[in-house]
Amino acid sequence: MKDLRNRANIYKDFDNHDRFKYPENLKRVTAGMGGEAILIFTDKYTSLYDTGMAYCAENFIENIKMELKARGRDKVDKIFISHTHYDHIGAMPYVIDQWPDAVIYGSKKAKKVFASQGARDLMKTLGEKARDNFVDTEVEIRNDNFKIDEVVINGDEISLGSSYMKVLETKGHTDCSLTFVLEPESIMFCSESTGVLRCKGDIHSAILKSYNDAIESVIKCREYKPKQLISPHFGMIPPYYIEKYFEIFIEESEREKKMILGSKSKGMTIKEIQMEHEKCYWSEERRSTQPKSAYVENRNHTINCIIREFEDEL
Image (tube, rainbow, N blue to C red):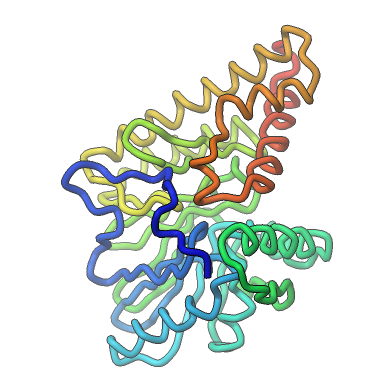
């Protein structure tokens, strides 16, 4: 394994706040760089939020088993999928091997994506590039056995015993993105459509499909007024910063949009806009949590999305 301990990390905590200090009924079971996963313990069920990267699946499974044993449990009952990107669902085949009866919840679009051979091939390719970025071993990256058992829509409530999971459709990052809220605790697991916090005052907008959908999603989440909020890849947001989190997402999204449209209005080619975007948003520090190939893939989608959606303003 590559030693990642001394690599720069774009995620920085707030003063006097541990972003990985989750409520007692949540346990972070992430095994490697680049993808997060959280176990959710309720009185009746054990659930898993996202499944992280494929390259570290073996250690990921061991982390889950360790936490299950500590709680006197032996299985994962339910799996909630935020969206279908490789860093959020890569280890799903390995999880299903271990707990084949677990029910997987996701959007209708996610079910369609998992049925696409082309989409699964892309997941495998990006998963292999992530593996090569983070570790030295040639661990197999699988792209079989991706599935959604139960399609959920906005407003659905999934029983977890005395608790339940509320579903919010939050498009923008992808068309399959979902936000889940654990109730009655009011813990919101945000999708990437409402951004990825890097540190105080710095958020990555991650808009790949629709700017307007993303803004609508962040407004929906803000108006829900969660008591606690988990930002994808980052972790727990300090409660006093929740409103600010949504505010800076809107500000950063507008800034990125203006940069792209401004470049286009100056007559820059798509290639030139891509290079301009890279100057603004890519750094070697960022490589510690994301392969550059994944950044390039996302960058191209973002630029095309913004130009397509606002071409009438050019």
